[in-house]
Length: 255
Image (cartoon, one colour):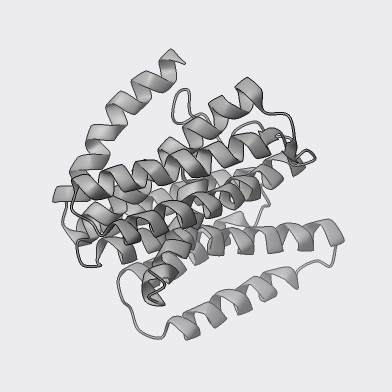
């Protein structure tokens, strides 16, 4: 617990500075670096010899999204075709499945690019902070409520410690946190409610999605790069899914 608090105390000021003061181009570089670090963790679960090619493909694909290079569909097809060519080397079930796993990781880390999409919205820096706070509050209360009085298992084969009671508390308190911050930052409360609710529902599935991977490969954390918190994947799984669905909320003008 002490390590978690110390790590948070160090990282939160940097995160706040980045959200409110960093130039967009610099934020894009940070997100690219974080994406590739996450991909390193992802690929370390099943480190095929060909994983170095996939690092290059991951950098190419995420860079293309972040820095507005043209022809994203062409880049997507290039990534897929190179992936298929790598697979021609040897037809072996486990190897083919591992290669598709590495390909899937490229799309997974691409979810981080939606951080920028939200920040570039009107009042986007405050919206992104609201999203982060809502997710962090929701995750914390889901853990403590589930540990204190959770009874009904949410997904026992994937994450045995998660409960419906904990998930409900997380969604409720995360949404309330969004409303409180939304009121403080003069954000439309209907928007704040929608963001908090959608983000915390999506965050549950984001958390479970990574838990599946760790369960398959018998890993507790994606890495130990953040003392007390695990790896980058562990910290951003909920936020990655949430950012995607919250951005769709704005794109489709749901709230």
